[in-house]
Image (cartoon, rainbow, N blue to C red):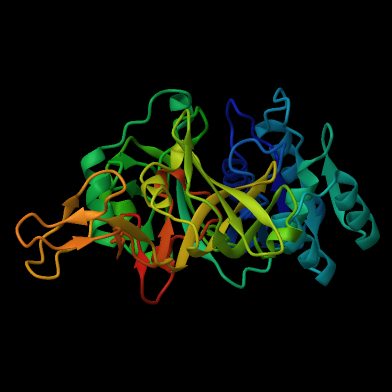
Length: 415
């Protein structure tokens, strides 16, 4: 049996991953959990998402399907925040994973789907489901079951004891930095070195204590054992599409659509401009079209790289398009355009810089008495290299692939 759940939390609290963790424990007397549960992030542009737009799924081997459905339904009713305006839980229990379900997942992570899209597929395939309120969670629940993780990472989430929900988290900061030092690059996005911030623990009132992400379960476990914190209620290791760029589509600038994420290639059309609030914008074009690209203030030090771009620089950019603007997640500077500056000419005899001889009279060297009519062009030395650059961990989207997962030359990690 494949069980999928989504849209049970709200901006105020609770958490779909916690509901799944509790449900797995309640179902153990009635079957065996097969493999790791899956934490699936969907399209980050979804308008009605609560926090991270995550859906959960796990497989259960059981000969008591009716009891399983009864327990799952009770857990959703008990551990969903039905008071949330955008909380519309969905529960799906399927016997198989079909090609149509897998195709549905791929659409859900890259497009904006409607509730009727999910209901139609569920009805066509004869899949058991329950939707509450508007039932929007059926989209994520179905997608999580259908997810084919050709690329994947892991996240270990520790959950707080119920009496501590809504109170400040107690985590020894020094041990978090030590855990990162011991396990990076097997783990990542635990801390943000440049901005000197711990980023693996939320600040909301939900049940999550912290989450450790990485590619190596052993490194994740070592980090977990190193970190000292308040007592935790339970912990779960999830297999996930986080950090995989699963949301990114290959695209052309003139063909992009809002609420989708792309990798685009083009040339910087004009120098980046800053506006009030610290946001940086530039235009990328390729002859067939152009698009505005943005490095918003939360991307912090990434903006210092974007500021140095100049017209003619050739780039690949990754990011989500909203309101016809691509929100940069990372970029690859393929080629830096040759830029020059006009300076006073050099004396051919003493090699010193000449001085102006007066308005419209060219330049002269007082020592050698040599003259020149105009300025000379010198190459502009830029403090910028080709290669990959990324936003810092404090600004990274769940799905965006960190550069630590990429191999090759000219990779400029954010740390």
